[in-house]
Length: 557
Image 1 (spheres, rainbow, N blue to C red):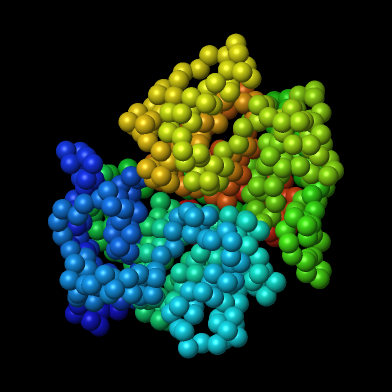
Image 2 (cartoon, rainbow, N blue to C red; image 1 turned 180 degrees about the vertical axis):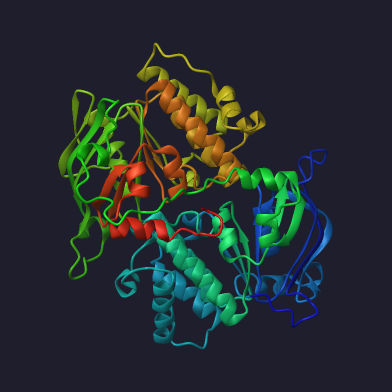
């Protein structure tokens, strides 16, 4: 709820202009950006990748790289311009009164510190008078509030012992730890499944209503924007397109660009579920293998157990300790099969085993008529080259020392070795297909936006010419218009080239759009499975229905 009790807004950005020092004749990065943030308000910023959304957030945080030059405008906190503050005053704002939730959770966490220690460090920095016991109590409360199960046990765990979604929840806890006045949240829920996303959005909304904190929410997820924001600012090519209350922008947009952006949003189509939707269904109605396709990839009895030696922690009482338990899947050639489930359910683990990047002590994978030993890594088992993976976190999966061109050309050479008789266009042609400017070929990963990096990862996988692609959240970092193009491209590639894809995602609308069949994972087990039509319209599995019901509703139906 917006409160207008102060005449001076908490934050005021006026006529902000930025450009790159190294390219003074290129288009400006930001041009005349103006907005105010009131206390107790959530302002959403939307727009395509490269529109300047994250740059605005970094400018408010004072984290702009030296290559950016401010050409006009002011940023003021409680009426005082940043330019009039001393370096010490600006430093005191950052982290304490203005905090951040960054899109790249991996880069936000120290791999050498336990997550509990990192949250505690922030708490003690803001409140040094607290005792260690009091700080630890606050840490456990924050971890529980952001959805970390068994916080007492997980307090001493390190970032690598958490899934991507769990790491993002830790980042959110750190941002909340200092009780700031403003949080800059850059794609805070992009790595979260629907049920945890709902919990986090409710947490942020409750914090705003209870404490008067203000949030700038940068997101490409229109469901998230519609769920909790009070106002929306639409950006394109560094310029403001329109700005208004959320309902007006989403339901009656003024600008053609906004209408185009909203039209690209995938909607989850959920018909009424019959009371006896699954009882007595014939096998061919529930089957996850369309009859018109031959079975190509078969996973049988795959199990993988957590071990203290690997993870450095003792399993709690009552926990099975299984990352995967007796998993069996059948994937037809030339189709896309979805895997859905909450963070930590085993989705990524099964994907990495199929790709040969992880081993499992039991089970086997059959591709075509060849059996692969999952107890051996991909290079030794022969999976390497037949399977490519698109990772969830593009920042980690791209070599920071290689340009985009070097990365893609290496993939082309690898694909030529695997299938030397194959012919495919080069890196530049693939950049065109994925909507990336060819000028980006000379850049390194740190010079790209999150969405641009993910598209490079998709290009790398396609150029290697695999038989199977395991795509782990490949669209989570993409804005809706680019996402629609990527979904179209992936579907066409699967159809035209007879590639089999495992599509791991928490975005149910995208899964419904792309996948012919769906497996629902829970706690390392297959909880539900069937054709996409069955899963979304007729399954009465309580867990499946809970995932579907957890989606933001104001803009997804």
